[in-house]
Image (cartoon, rainbow, N blue to C red; front, side, top):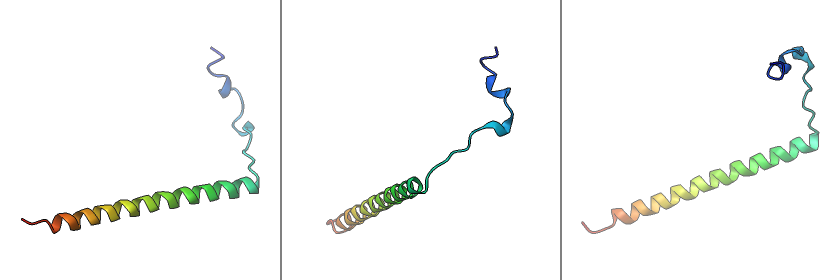
Length: 62
């Protein structure tokens, strides 16, 4: 039973803090901004396709 509760025996302040270098933080931030830019460009492309489709449907003869 001690295998299941071994994490509770230690005091709460004993966890090791995450140490990330400034260069790694900058690289992760750059990757996150590139991903956000890619997603926003994809949504703009989707909106343009939808607009073009709506214009084509609107001009169809009734």
